[in-house]
Image 1 (tube, rainbow, N blue to C red):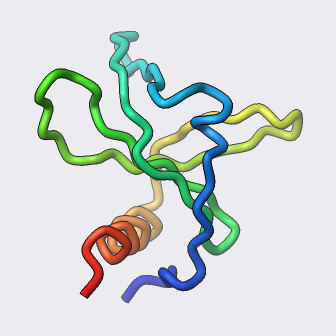
Image 2 (tube, rainbow, N blue to C red):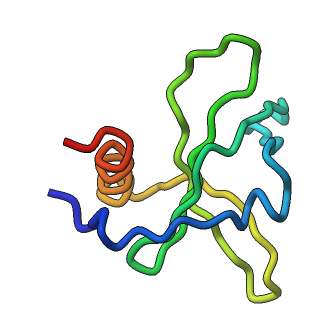
Length: 100
């Protein structure tokens, strides 16, 4: 059972406002890929962005990344390293996307 509740979700647009609807991410080898920002939301004091690879006809699974705000107010995206948090946010996104 997730610690996050769909009733607590607050939709946001901070990444889209800061960077636009398409963001460039680099992998560990420096290869750039472009992702479309599908959704952004805050829940339980944390912020997340749902991204999908932006290539023609791509039917890829969405990537959910944590939105981090530096003390100076700069936004960045990070992978979710904590397994429990990753499971919780993925279950929440499924609940938000495919309500029963």
